[in-house]
Amino acid sequence: MECGCELLVLEADVTRLRSIVTFPRLTLVKVTKAMPMMITKKTTMHIIPGKILPRRDGHDILWIGMALILCSTSAWSQVYLTKEAALALYFPNTSIERRTVFLTETQVQIIQNTAKATVPSRIVTYYIGMNNDRAIGYAFFETHIVRTMPATLMIVVNPDSTIRAVELLAFYEPEDYRPPKRWLELFDGKSMQSDLWLKRGIQNIIGATLSAQSISDGVRRTLALYETAVSGGR
Image (cartoon, rainbow, N blue to C red; front, side):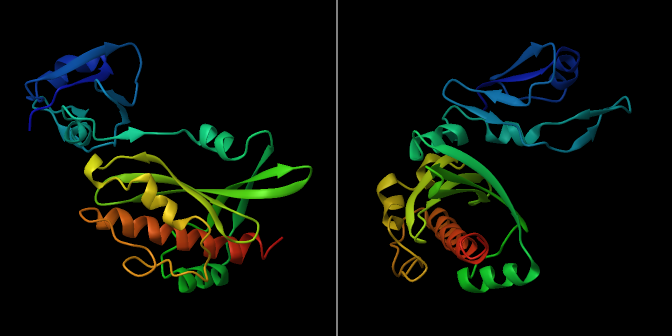
């Protein structure tokens, strides 16, 4: 695989990395401190830590091979919105409160049974848009693996347990697998009483079934979480 990118590394590591990196178009850029990012012409992506490989002289060096796998002449990863920008977009001119809920085992089981999706953590952070001491919406952020790389969503839930919006904030798979905005809008206004199952109430995306499946699972999981531990726990 040919790699055309700049990789930021410590100056002391340039010579050592050059001894094992054979990608013909790789440029190692010397910096004065560790910077866990890889820069291409079109995008910036975080390096996923790889494994430690032994050098011939017996010392270990950090091999960032996973970063090189991600690097190509086309921009695979995209960050479309930061968390702060997304919250400001959907909750303009409001105060935003950050909350954390610690799910009980019973709540986890209820959510998983309702959504038919796994709850990855019992600790959930969400955000409430407040206007005159009244909640106008709830924002949940979810990062999940699509095929082999992650995607990050913001799912905004109305106080009446309906979906206000599903916003794709970052997508690290190839662009061919990215769901279009018009498909994400299929969830608008839907609730747990709606048919939120792929190929039933939610149409599939040809060539991007795994993307569609993971997002559909995330929406159901978020709604079940909201009804079980947020709106029901207020």
